[in-house]
Length: 253
Image (tube, rainbow, N blue to C red; front, top):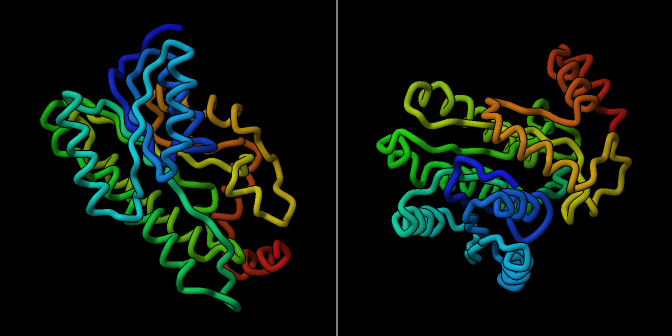
């Protein structure tokens, strides 16, 4: 496989699902990947799989919910490897948060992982990237960021934060040599979506989603929403007046 321009990459949430797939995708193309997640045993298995394919994945035990530690650890990795070229903030948490039965613990965890954790991951070495005049930061948001979906107050809001955060970074970093990409996946088979008890339209296999995401990153897309069918539906919902959206959303319950 042809080598990419990235020498090093960090992927959070790499113990399963999209993060695991992205770590392997880049490692198999000659990138030294630091795979970060909480579950050490899963990371070791991932590193062994990469090794069998003559690829290099370095396990990094990390809980992004601890933002201060995440910031410090990523800075250590950046210094140790001579500069991270690509950082993918993929770690995410999602559970139902219906306004009628809302639980603060669930809301807090979504904020700790999807907001504070993602922001710490992306902010950690941005000044260094700007100084080096190279680098690429990627935030994995969600099509759920487009509107406040029923029973998903915490998840939708946390991904909306990430979407706006990435947009501001994109504007600020133009001309610095640092690229910014925000990804908006729809429903993808994973441990997180396996808990959903409703029909998930246009559900993608993990491998298919990984391929689409990785290619968007390599192309340097500013934004990439997929699958196109679900992205189009959410784009329409985003433009609806509140009264019409609220009526439509009630039917999604």
